[in-house]
Image 1 (cartoon, rainbow, N blue to C red):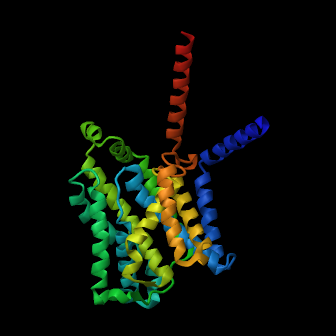
Image 2: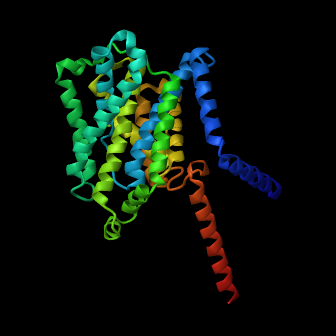
Image 3: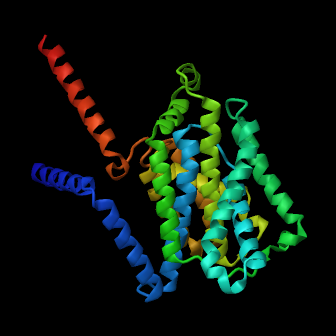
Length: 349
């Protein structure tokens, strides 16, 4: 057992050396992008596996963006499906009614970006009044917002009403999902480990103390919420051009519950946990598909069990070293070493 433990530690140390190399991330991203292009172009993976990977990528974007609010900031939002719907409808209307059909392939990134911006602007309108109060009011406001979005879309004939909207081309491909997933992870990771991100974390620990220490808590909350809404809109646009059909019922409270399950399954305040939660949940949904509607009973039940036995999730409040900046790793190592030295000195006395 000791030899196995030593071998594991040696392998772990070598892995840490590899990921600390300055060329690791560029090589990793280039290889990932080339693989996604090859899989999509030369059918290295069959269409079903490609579709599963696309759903995994979209769910990662949704999970990591909601984790910014529910995990890192410590608030509780349950209206993520509403922002996803805005992004899906805006991007779809652009590719169906505005952009010329012959140029859709080239203008698709602009449509996705427009969907994200529209969701961010609506998120700003929701955040400004919501964060005037403290406590659980955000959950109530975002729940009402999700219901309002669904009701409004159902009563606008220009976007299909309750029948939904169709006519979108299948523009979401594996390379595009890889690009937007990496972008969302990169932005939120850098945001969390920036000076602004420290303010977000301080709100989770103690908002009053954070305010007293000079953090503009309301501004931090609003910006974080807008960023989260933006990426939910991006995911919505990708989702719409994967299915080639959307309707308001797809973005109800059940969809928000799915995203919550992924966040709390993988772990709060953890980017690696968001990836893990999205991957496990998406795969489980496919494995349990033969159960029909009963799988939608099993998933909320899993959330209940998680809240009872592991409320922080699999990687709650922990992060994989892959996503931690070197300066934070060195600072953490230095702090642990100093703590050990001080403990040894006190024990010697």
